[in-house]
Length: 512
Image (tube, rainbow, N blue to C red; front, top):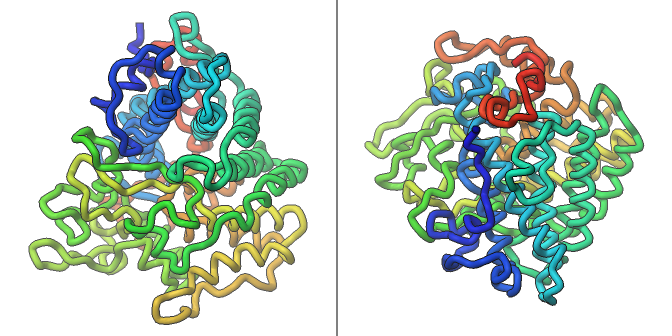
């Protein structure tokens, strides 16, 4: 029988072997009744969901090792990611076989919390707020899963021997549940100032729902205006609730986390000696002055050449380039200078590094660097895209131009680029706004989804062909991307097929 990785309740509350995500003291062994009979116990339960959501098996490592290179916009020099980097991901990819159980562990911890709180008669002041967080994270996790894999097993109760083996639910069934969970989260989650400041408030659920409807609006080659309208109705509720930071680089300042632009950040802290995130060493170049002193980093995941080129070609002198990339060259710890893309186009240094995840205090195991899941600039770009689909560009410019105006800001005055949008047709606006999302949000976890939600032809035209036809394509390191529709989804892991009696090879995604 498959060794199916499930977090049962006891593992939620024993933080001695886990990341202390909210900088609290570890809890001792507690029964379910004891945990959910007190406000502190309930907070510990929610802490456990966030712990799993942020773990190396999910956002702390596997997400970056697999999803970034498989997006088609990044390169990884890690052998374990070669199949994903070449868009030939196999069902036994090491990151895939960690990510799948990691997501379902998160779902199970959320299910335990939902089950206990929905059926409890104990009057607790934080009951609704905590329950809202559980629905929110379950929905967010299923939203990741359904976009990566299509239909997946829909686990809505705490795992036990009777529910260990479940078939894949349809994609539509999963989306229906996601919408229900986010709607419930909207009802239960707090507003500003009502709960713990490091946790998202109800507006994050509104924004997620808008993303869900945007994704559904273009599924199967459709352009469903009713779903675009639903997306608008959710997104507009968030408009004006947050504000852009003055400078783009301020968003990624380690001393400015959870700022006024942040809508949902995954919190990390350095308490304890247990590994909590590999993000710092995943992106930071080896032996560079960007790396923490005496700590090993790998700099494995970098931007593809055409990813960097499209931004620089569209907006020469865009201040976001310097905040997003380590490019041209960088200083090393031995006093030498290392040349990288675009000055160098071959070998492992023939790529620009990502600059958004620098942490000079990284100790080789844990980091204080948070991971931003949602921020206000994303919401503005969503509103611009939605408004253009509903009514054309006339009233859509206002949203994107807020983002561009901030992007031009520098400490020495405004730059010339990126210029405001103006004078576009609906089709031109649609094309540009998708690229704008790449320039503004690169390496923040949106790219895999954005390049696929407009359909396979879009994926070919904006990922496959630009990569394979890049003038700086180098045979020694760059992979020729295959022209195949299978890359619109990831494969179901072989472990799941061999261990879940309700899923067989016949249920595998097409092409794998």
